[in-house]
Structure formats: C-alpha cells, structure tokens
Image (cartoon, rainbow, N blue to C red; front, side, top):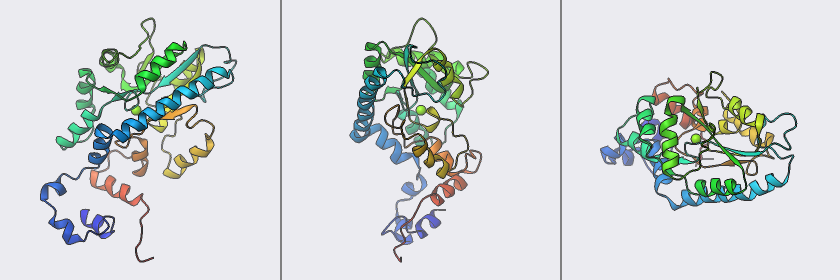
Length: 283
Ligand SMILES: [Mg+2]
C-alpha cells in the first residue's frame, strides 16, 4: 500500500527510492493519528482555534439569549420561546482533551477499543479544551443550564463527572445533566433523542461539538451528503452550532470508508487515500 501511495506522487518530490530509503522505523510506525494528535496536543494553533470557537460561542450566546425565537436544536418543538435557556456540549474533544489516549494508541501501535477506552475514562485524567470552561462559566453567569451530551457509555458517568469536576467544570448537582449513551433505552449513539429530551424543557440556545452527529444525525451519509449539510443548515453553523476542530477521529473519517469499521486497516486506509483529490503534475 505504501508503494501505491508513493506511486500516486502524493509525497511531492519523493521518489519511491527516497521513500524506501527512509529509516525503517519511520515507515513501520506510519500512523494516521500522528500529525493529528501532535497538532491537537502540542500546537498553539489548535489552542487558538479552540479559544476562537469559544469566544464566538460567547458572542452568539448573547445574541441567542436576546432573541426568544432562536433555537439551536432542530428537535425543538412547540412553544419554546419562554422556556429557560440551555446549552448542549459534547464532551470528548469538545470539553475534554483526550489526546493522551490518542498518543497512547500510536505508541502501543493499536486502534481504539472500548476495552482500553473505558479504563482511560475511569482514570479521569483528561485535560480541558482551551476556552471551554470559561465559556461554560460565562453561560452560567447568564443563568443558562449546561447539558453534557456524550457517547461515553452510561457506566462511565462516574469517571466523566469526576474528571469534569476535578477540572472545575460546572456540573448540576440537582438533576442529571450528563446524558450518556445507553442511560435510557432510547438513548443510542444517535444524539437526536437526547437533544429532544433537553429541548422538551429548555430553549436550546447553542450546541458545541466536534462531530457532525453532535448537531444533526447524518448516519451513513456520504461525503457529498455531509457536505450538503453546510448549505442546509447555513443559519446554524458558527452561530447556533459551534465546532471544535478534531483531526484525530470522527464521522468525517468514517464517511470515507463507508462507516465499515470492520474492514481491515489497509483497506480503510486505501479508501481514505481514494477519497482525496490529487494534483496531477502532467495536466
Ligand atoms: Mg466529541
């Protein structure tokens, strides 16, 4: 597969011979997660990007609070105008930074598994995403309720809440606002039912997430269908829906290999390579 990769001239200026001459470790450890994790974990550019998103979220929150007809949830129904305001935030890579887990995957030469993810979550060692706590505190200062809607599994609530509280994040003590996958039978990985659950009693002023499914369900959507959602929801993006960059994983990646997680890694990687548009120097 690396030969195919080189033959496509993706590595501009690299001949196959150059590639073969690279230190063996560099080739053997080629991992799609490396640059993505490095950027997210170490770069000031990622931090600044997250800070920008959360600063924008503050501005838009004020706008949304001032306009009673404003709602960020497409599940919002009925007379919602006078309901109390709420914000829905995803957790992973939106509020909590799990780059240490991703870095460990690279080091251990393995892929995501719920068997290793669960103890990582229960260890409650994730770091804050820049700007997220400040935004939540800002929303609280305006009397806005905070709901965390995450696809962490129900048994992982203790570790999740501990991690959030240890970092000083607001978590409601009166009733459950950490809504995890499987807590109720109808709460699957599709977050629609949980957004509807919040929208029943609150006007959802804003949603913050790193994955398309945090905002709208687009199960099995192709890259083109996903792309079309930018237009469909043009009034939502960057005003009601605030996105945090996640180059490490997400439905954007799965869409390239048809969400077929069981495919061999080599095959998935080839489908990812085939999803890109290439410069042809001969044209
Ligand atoms: Mg996430």
